[in-house]
Image (tube, rainbow, N blue to C red; front, side):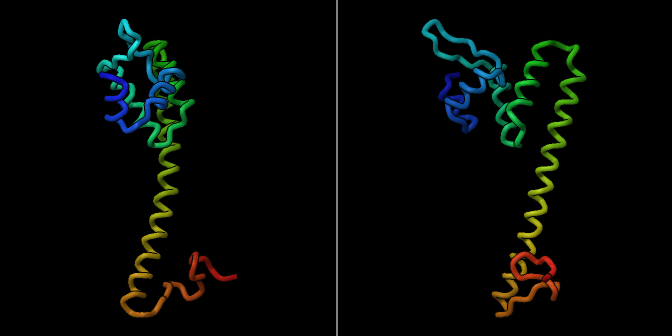
Length: 137
């Protein structure tokens, strides 16, 4: 598979894909006699993992470390597992932030939708600020 095809499949730029290879997020890709990258199924799996984890917010440094450990062999299985657990916890913490923001947004949308219907803007808590719903000081 060509670099163009891989980039199209995963929605990333050729520069990103080359960067992943250069820093070790994906293993070196086989090149034809003419020097053109030719991605095989194993390469595609690495690209898929990298793009998935990056889109979830995993730092590039953790991905690089994960691949390094993988290349060292099975004696690093525990270390890889711990690294993924750490990355998972970071992602969960980020998701909590998004969940909190969505909850706040959903509340405000409900209040505004009701205001559109009734012509009156009323917050659930009389002592809250109309913009952030925090108690007035």
